[in-house]
Length: 368
Picture 1 (cartoon, rainbow, N blue to C red):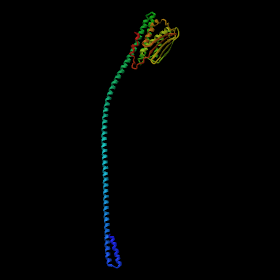
Picture 2 (picture 1 turned 120 degrees about the vertical axis):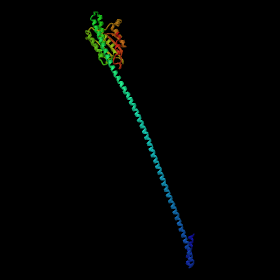
Picture 3 (picture 1 turned 135 degrees about the vertical axis):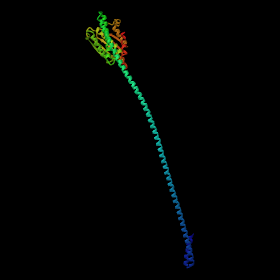
Picture 4 (picture 1 turned 135 degrees about the horizontal axis):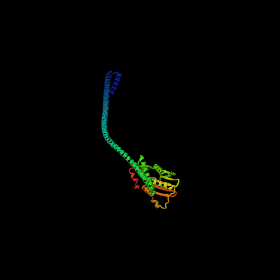
């Protein structure tokens, strides 16, 4: 509006100047200047207002930015404080957890220490008790060893005295035989002496052996044969074929076997041969726990038709009795010589019975 007025007065001012109307031209010029100055003032005022608005706006923006930065700083500071609090809380929790774990470990360690002390005390008490028991056991073992040694000595002494007593009885029989003229009586005394020697030889072997319950039957049979060969004139002409299994017999079985061998070999030497001959002696296992003793000769044999009288002869009766004592069977055949077979159960040696003291008297039930 002011600009239009200023333009109008300027045109009028120029038109008046051109017409030469200077008074109107000056008036219009003054009005033009007035409106121009007013327009300028308005514009300047508008610019100032704009600048003021802009300044205020920028000031507000800066204030807002400053406030925003302050808020951000406060927020960041708050976050830092929260993080610091979390860190402090975590550190506190870690310290508390570590302290609790340390206390637990200390308690466990103390408990283990107490348990170890208690266990050590118990072990020491047990060890002391074991030591006492060991001392008692050693004393008992020493006493048992002493008793065993005394028992072995007594058993050896018994075997030795039995052997000596049998030798005395044999000497008495020999002395008695010197005053006898009856042939049957002399033969009876001689056979009794052989039987006693068979028993005496067993006691002699037991007396000399460390094991006083078992007899090496192979060695025993060889020695018995040597004795019988020395006891008969012309017995050296007879050959002995021995097939003996490597077995050791208990005294309760060795004595009956020795007496059976004595009877069978004595009869063979006395009656089977007129010249040279062979006697087979075999002892073998015929089963897991069965032994078979065979005494066979290739001599004349004997007549079996008088079986009743033969059965009644003392030697055969004795062999039957001894076989029954072995809980075995006796079989006698007389074809092309005599074959005597004894089958019996092998008695396993008891490891606990090494002295054989209990067998000394039980082996002689047939002597009563």
